[in-house]
Length: 164
Image 1 (cartoon, rainbow, N blue to C red):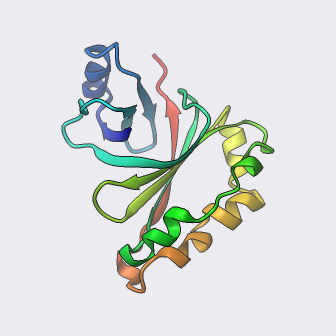
Image 2 (image 1 turned 90 degrees about the vertical axis):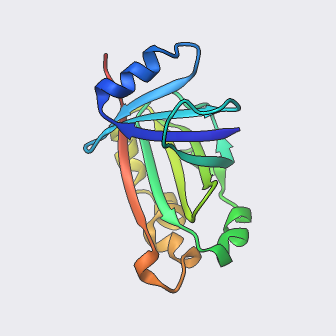
C-alpha cells in the first residue's frame, strides 16, 4: 500500500475529491496550503504527489487534526532507522492520541511521521511530552541524518480537517 500526499489550492483539490467519491481521500488545511492524503493500493489520482511506503502504523486514520513531521534519514542510516523500535504502546497513554504512520519515501531521504489526535489541544500537549522529545524531536532524529548539515531537514506541519 502506498501513501500519497499532495497540496494546492482548495478549489482545485476539492474537484479531485468530488470527482472521486469512491476513494478515501482526506482533505486538510494548514497555514500554507490545502492538502490531500490518500492510502491506497490503486494508482494515484494526484499529478505530482509525495509518494511513501508506510513502514510502521498504528490505528486508523480519519479526518482529525494531524501532526506531520518531515525529516531526513541519510542513505547510510536508513536500514538502522527502518528497524528501530518505537514503543507504540506508549502512545496510547496520551489523551486524544488516535493514529500514527511512519512513512518512508519511495524516492529520496525525507521521511514523515504522521500522528493524529482528537483535537488541536491534544496535539499541542503531545508536542510537549517526554515521548515526543525522546523519539520525534529534531534532537532525537539527528542521529539518523548525514554529516552534511545543509541537506538535513526537520520541520512540522499542523493539518486540520477542511470544513465544508
